[in-house]
Amino acid sequence: MAEFRLSKLGVFSIDYGFDNEPEWAVPVVPESYVEDLEQFPKDSEKIPVWFQEKLDAVEASRREYRRWKLQGGR
View 1 (spheres, one colour):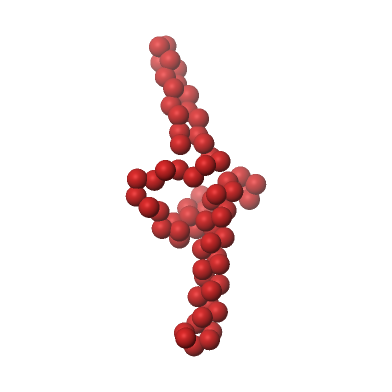
View 2: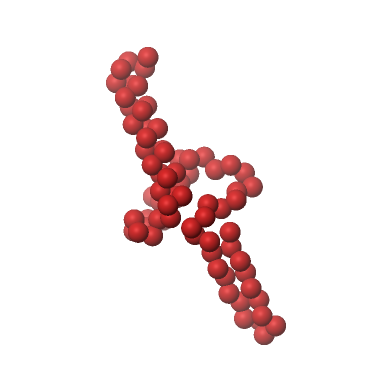
C-alpha cells in the first residue's frame, strides 16, 4: 500500500509499505515476481519477505516440474 500526502503549499510525499504484499485488483501470476526481479534487480537484503516467499514458491514449482520431467512425466 502507498500513502500520498499533499500539503496546502503543494509539497507532497509518498510512503510505500514494502513489508506487505500489495492488494492487487487482479491476481498476479507467481512468475511475474521472477520477471520483476529480472527487470529490476535488487540486492537480497532489499527484497521483502513476502516477495522472497513468492520467488521461493516459483523455484520449488520449477524443481518439482524438472523432477517430474526426469521421471518421464508420470
